[in-house]
Length: 205
Image (cartoon, rainbow, N blue to C red):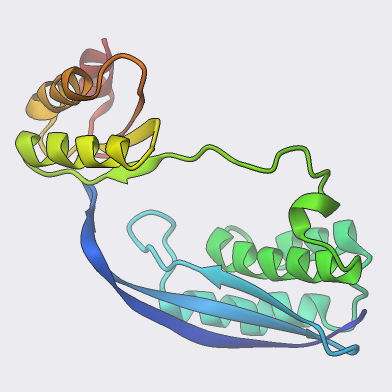
């Protein structure tokens, strides 16, 4: 199974609920999709998220990185050479982790297709289910509490609570959520670079 081409496409969709962090508000996704083609007709699919404020990557930089650095580095390689492909992707350019991740995903997709099995089985098939969290966007305390209760009622047992827009109120938000959802729900806190080092130490304590 040899890599013959890589093509890019745009993935765009509105969000039912805006995603809010200390750095940005997102009301729609606009990502870069990746198709990796092989000589036996298989296609691997991956996706990259342009988040300039976090990774430094934009739509244009992801497209340029894949087309001019990653693609030339791995064209013609056999998918079975998985470790070598990953090494070539990583060494093709410094940083640009979202662009690399998109191609990484597509390569793993192809690797599993080569075994005619889902990727989770190829990687060991240890679990049939994975526990994930749901993100609670940063809003006023009452709205975040309501969003947390709704998430728990939907079956989520881990909440990833966004904070950092107003450090003085972050403790209030998390305490209110804890009281609302009870002691058995796990709470993760993500300030998205919204705290200074001193604020982080004080708030965490």
